[in-house]
Image 1: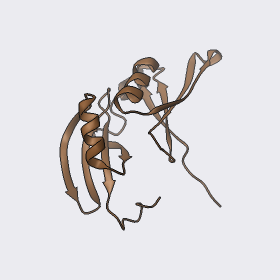
Image 2: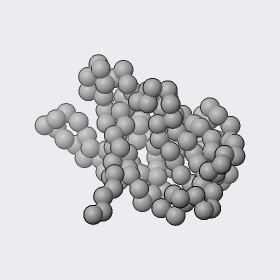
Image 3: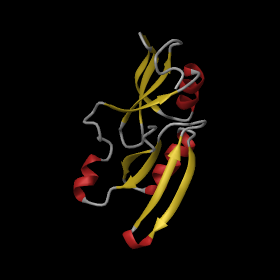
Image 4: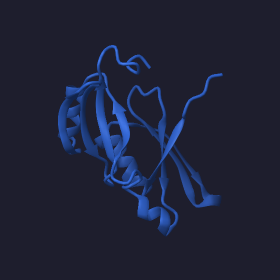
Length: 138
C-alpha cells in the first residue's frame, strides 16, 4: 500500500492576499485557483518550488469560528515545516522579500532551523536536514 498526504488546509482571511503572500514572499507556485460558485468559495492550491510533498489548500474562513483560527491553527506552536536543500540561500531570500523571522537560525541535532511567520502569524520552520537524517532522502 502506498499513501501520502496531498493537501493541508490552511485557513486564510482572503484568497487573493494569501495567494500574493505565498507566491511573492515565499516563492510558491499557484497550482490551482478554481471558482466553486455553488459553495461561494474557491479551490486554491499552492506549493513550494520543486515541491514533491503535500500542497497547501488555501481555505477562506467561512464562519466566525473559523475566522478565530486564522493565524493560530496550531495554538502558537510551529505549524508547518518548509524543508530546503540550502538553508542560507533561502533564509536570505525570504528576509529580502520581507518575511518576518521570529527565531534566529540555530544548529540543531537534525539540521539548521529558523522560525518565521506567514502573513497571518502561523509559525513555520525553515529547515535543512543534516545528511543521514531519516527524512533527508524523502
